[in-house]
Image (cartoon, rainbow, N blue to C red; front, top):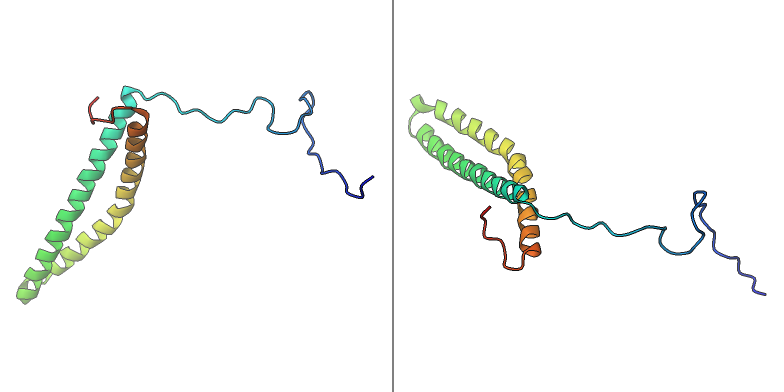
Length: 123
């Protein structure tokens, strides 16, 4: 006989068969089918992220123009404060951009992986 003890067994709910390995009825989750609504949502999220990113780029350019204008003359000092307001808006839009872009990228990748011909972006 061996001096080793058998490994501990976890208690199982009553009525389940006592077998080692994976629990009874276990199967890895299967991805659902891709519907037209899923494709539309992926496109909507993608374009929303593009629009938010474009607005952020425009706000950055406008803020630089405001700073240049505020630096030219002391009577235009309010443009510097407007530039600061735009920077706060850009900082507030970063989480929104991430919240749109990350799910859009994951959805588009799933669409590309699931369709043999690739995703064309249409409905």
